[in-house]
Image (cartoon, rainbow, N blue to C red; front, top):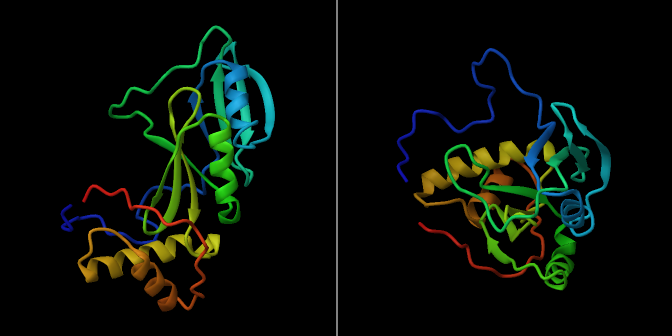
Length: 204
């Protein structure tokens, strides 16, 4: 990948007419209510916090799930739609959804996925650690844990600093040494979680 980019990687707010304040919710075209609840509530443990008609199309139901921090994932579902085997890739399509998980529950999560008959892969992505599986419609679901203790309000700062250090190092992607150097530079403790060894799964 070329490092000659015109857009800087920084936590500074861009010169834009306005700025977003966070992610409120993401909405996905779902299949049916039973399969959707079975995966997102009963397996991933997201509370179903609201159910009502889709206000744009009352023939469908709108399900709201709390992903764990008050941010919401919603689905438009209809009982006449069976779950699908996979997603069609293409510009504008969703590649995957990622949800954070507690690193102390990593082994339990893998066991639960196996017990539910869900295949999964585990990768060490350098800046975080991820389990990949699929939902009832074949949408790729990533369950991610930070590899290091990082305060939520400092995460962007840590990543941007690791990016600068990675570029100076001439490395293809951010790795442990870049994350640790970033934390040290920012005066944050370098506390690494005990996560399983895994391949990077990179194509570079």
